[in-house]
Length: 546
Image 1 (tube, rainbow, N blue to C red):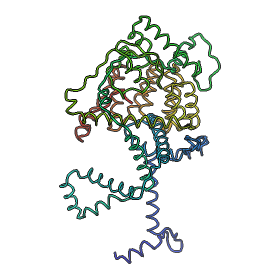
Image 2 (image 1 turned 120 degrees about the vertical axis):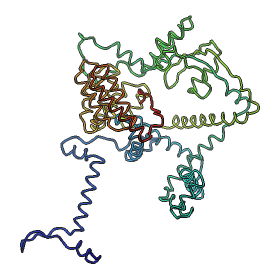
Image 3 (image 1 turned 30 degrees about the vertical axis):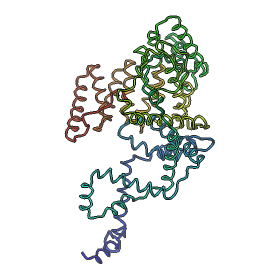
């Protein structure tokens, strides 16, 4: 068919019927266009799912009640649309590594990154750290050369590529520059880099400081947290089986004591323990019984050997002032109240210290500059007026500060405001479980696993199964575990860990057929790893890691 005949064919409307009763339809070109649009819509549906919120609203579901502003920094807003843009970009990076219920870290880190960036940009402007057009051009050139080095680590691979593609090096550089990076983004990046360079440039390392950097101390500590006081009070006040329930609290968690009371109780307990230690009590025994640092309490609070820069500043200052055998006064940090006992101290310089002094100085300077920059960023935060407005993000801030009761109230509000927010709901269920309200936790997890967004979460099904099992509902628990297995379908480490955990659960429940099913999946996964060469010697994270 000639070009002209093809053009006429695609431009002529299609007609159906006989004689005068013929119906004129779309032209072939228009019909193909419509089919393409339909194909795109179908592809979008299966890639991103249905327009759930709009559909939900049409079914009578309430629209999410979300604030326009997520947070403010010195009264300047971080808009929700700005936050969501960063969040979507970051979530895509973690899509394969994290279960949908594990996005608390992503959501908080994105906000923290935005706050850090704005505070640092304001500081760079105060310091008059300007960026010129030449700076931007040089940065573009540097990025091109970095990309060339990444793609072609040696000259031969670069030369072979150019010959194969029949292009020049300048043409390749031009291709790498497309699309060009945004000038404003580059300018911001350069300003922040200049700010960090200025802060780090002020760091020096004298011979005395260098020698002091080799000093290490071996210490134990007892940590008492305000959050621990709230949990202890809640446990003490739980009604027994014959007790009557009083009126339901606002968030489902009864606020037994205020945050200030909890802080005071923590300090009083720390003071009592310090008095006991000074009276001759065994430090390690008290640490095992009372410390709320769960990573060290089994070892009697033993922290091992550490140098300067490895602990928070308040803790480090006291630890390096104490002599072996001494116990310091109570130290308050962001974690709570610490009692510190230094057991030993050492600080011999390496044998080749004089010969390799500059090498050691350079290594120490790297660490000192890192600490200086972290301290500078911390000061920017301390001096700023930061207010988190979004209930979910506010809840995480409060929970990280140990303000459990207040944090749960905000978390419950976030879950109520947006029925699709399975992250907030899952975190709420975890807290209910921690404080002994398993029935409430089960209700939330049942809602999550029955929802459009939570049904695909192996982790949610797994946790529901564990809680049901703890309540003696074995049949329901097994069903939840089987759902977790069904949804952990990808040959990735995240899903591999789910099947290993499920196999252990089914072994304990003596479900031999289900154990065999899990082993079959694990065998298929291992075969996939061998065939594809992926896994690199199976460097998996521990099964209990997030």
